[in-house]
Image: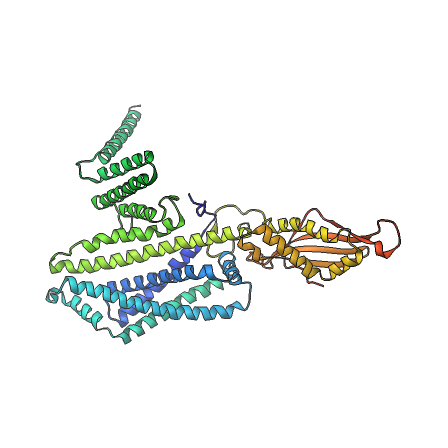
Length: 180
Length: 336
């Protein structure tokens, strides 16, 4: 055993529960939007909603882990205060938080859009490679593929933006209910 | 009585079955089987114990490879799956071994990196067979499951990476507790994100210790000094004591991050016979108490005349401090 590992003193159970709750809110909302706007079938839209949300939170976590050791001590103290004691010492911080959440919103949107492009490519490309004979696909499947292939960047951007905005609103609503 | 015998007999039968299946598990059915690989790895470890130098490392390395191959084989051999997913239990074991192999080799078996990367590696180990299956010509009907498989792999990888992130988050907050030991004794009741496993301890003694280390230094500067000098010192006590305090904190807390969060401040009051000097060590870091807390040591500074002369020039200062320090919750009193 290295000295990094010791018996746990605290566990981040609450953080995990919250994250699962947020994901469970965001995934159905986004899946519905994808289903409606991008005309994916239910299964595909749920798949995209799950992978976009989970991967973007993974990327968010990685960003947090990279930034956290570099934070100046004052901000780090605030962060620890928030995580451990659920309070903020400095009242000026709320403006910062509004700004920060706006940045987070924009970057989540960008990340989700990029992920969407990558995933669509991954799903389609592998599909066409293993199987060139499209005639053998059912009409439903073919329609799906054509739909996905035809997707314009424009529709994709709109759908991702709306989905992201709606899931963010839902999550903010939950946070508001909780804090009041 | 009869039924009791039956029960005992059933128990024996159960144990016998267990042993038989264990025996079946342990004896290789043929020369090329996963058991052989596991035994080879055990054998290599055994031999590496007797070897020295780089030979030992090479043999141990071979042992690792055998172990990885054996468990990977077992994985594909007998797909017992983790409940709720299509991830075989074997992949979890293989993943663990791979991450130990990657990050824990030589120094120590378990490091935080090993544990953090484990779920992700397990997902990758599960995913790999999916990319090798069915690359040959397949009928068109197998198409849709292929797409579904791909989706399953992506979702599994996503969740496993998220689990890795949670593990890493645990290590981050654990690191905070180690970097700032004073946090450890605080109250996490209000937190929405963490729960405490060990009972809450006493308020951290660090401020107390700083005061005890600081007191002799202050004594040195005040005791038996001419009274006028001492009054001058008290006038600029903020700076004087602040400097002394900073030095004490730096030499006592060393590399700990906490040293930046403690500060020492004086509070001075005029009393009839001289001055009362309160030395405060104030915690400026995160705490559950809304106003923070500080430690206080009270000292009495009085003039005294050793030769019993009424000459003002010979007057020196005497200082006497409380032996025990006091822990005060709330923000420190304003400075005069």
